[in-house]
Image (cartoon, rainbow, N blue to C red; front, side, top):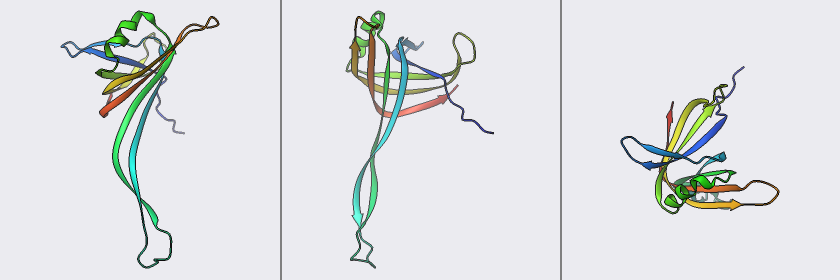
Length: 148
């Protein structure tokens, strides 16, 4: 039997200084991470010249690609100024993927890295539960993968 090699959790970091050494700030509290990739296309329909009375078949042309990272979890007022510093500013983001190996830190599987802009930060507070936050990072250029 073959099982997929999957990470158990992910951590998002903002690269706050290029270094050396590179300085990163953990977005502590963001516990749910989604990495989203998409390809934009344009479409046209072409008829078969041998069957001109039949409907054309769709043809797709790739016109671009994009990526984004969304995260949600507990709000963390301690890093509010870090969020403010990167709000609407191009920054390098790193998403580290880990396996739960029974240790405090987990086993690093690898890291996604790319330049993006923090475009959304929603915070919610109620008397019934602790504060929560949702973020969106819209990426530019490539999102790269480096295995551990």
